[in-house]
Image (cartoon, rainbow, N blue to C red; front, side, top):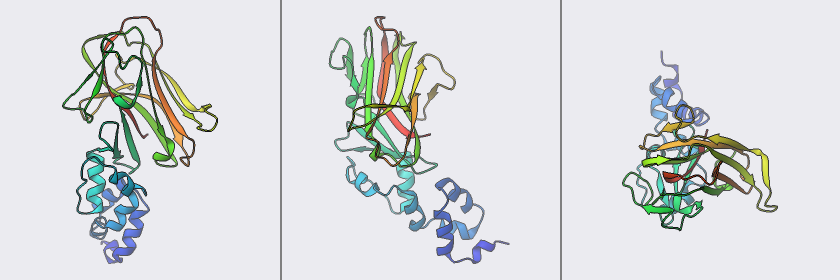
Length: 260
């Protein structure tokens, strides 16, 4: 007997809104009472970020949806480009509804990024941004990017990922150092206790390098905890551990910040 079917839909909606998007989808398959309530805007509005209206207003193209559930899954499946569409993208984590951002390569600080013989800017059909950085031939690389913690979801563990692929006969790049750290805007001091420092080999697969559903690859650079979003900026850096060796063939789409 489906006891939940006899509860008022408003009561069930309140119960579901206190769970998670993943739990709501699972519960809706167990009871007709849950299924009806799981479609309501009142439930899915609780899973959306409180500042979502402001974020959508910055979208480079219209965001079309008929209800809040559709909006939720649209943002999970199809990241939107913000502002001029060349610097930042936004999406939602499917399981939690937490905010995800990717900083485009053009917005990163890439050493020799403006030197044509070292770095070429190209357009690729499967990149969400209009340009990607193609490392041509350099003896040392250093890539940095940062985002304000107030833009991220509060009380959330985040990881930062280098989103990349190889071009042709890539070489070098075996020994790199990835660093994620919180930087106070007032003191400009690095908070080493809330950062991570990892050694990365882009040519080694397994748990470090992962294939993405969009056809790119990613490697986790490090993680941090975003408490109240008042810690200033979080900076991620990908740097060559052994400089002055020739390297080439790395294509960078961006740095992605998303919940762990």
